[in-house]
Image 1 (cartoon, rainbow, N blue to C red):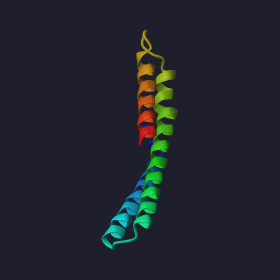
Image 2 (cartoon, rainbow, N blue to C red):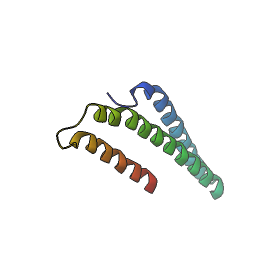
Image 3 (cartoon, rainbow, N blue to C red):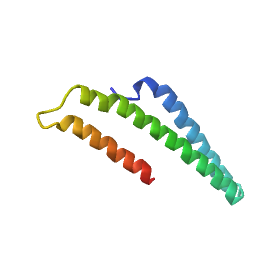
Length: 97
């Protein structure tokens, strides 16, 4: 089960709104809208996607990572350590973007 399973409908609704925003940006470009206005909408869509990403990350930490830690690990701690490393890498990608 995924960490976002309980929020799947909300997640899909947010993604559909972002999709609509991106379509609106394309229309703005087709209509030769002023550059700054287009950039403002790109920024809004980017922030909306970042909010989705942060929600997914929170769900991952609260579900997948917590379960791996609670279940214990192999003798060398690999399972929980792997989930934590995976989450850390995802955070690094979000920060870089």
